[in-house]
Length: 123
Image 1 (cartoon, rainbow, N blue to C red):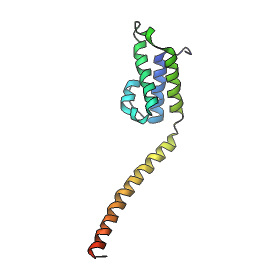
Image 2 (cartoon, helix red, strand yellow):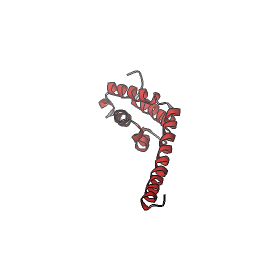
Image 3 (cartoon, rainbow, N blue to C red):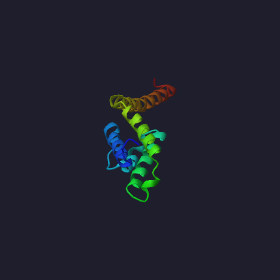
Image 4 (cartoon, one colour):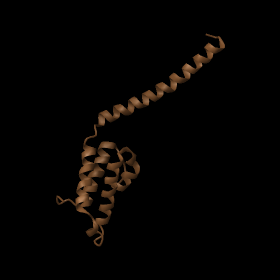
């Protein structure tokens, strides 16, 4: 590993979760509970592994069981995904999704109302 402890890796991933996805909380495990659904499954599993490795590295007896190669791989996968998120595109996508939901919520009842009026002979 590049002289990074699992705790440092977990802290950096937690910082990126806060910065890129606006997930609140203290520590990686709390942020994953709050915003884990925003991550793809493979990235979420890597981040969960980082959180557990960071917790295990705090205990001297468990520290030797932490796989540093897997920590580095998980860390790099999380960084690659989180740094590739475009905040403005994500914000635009959420806005368009809400807008389309509202439009369908208005359009479908209006079409049903018009259809009923035509069937009854009022239009």
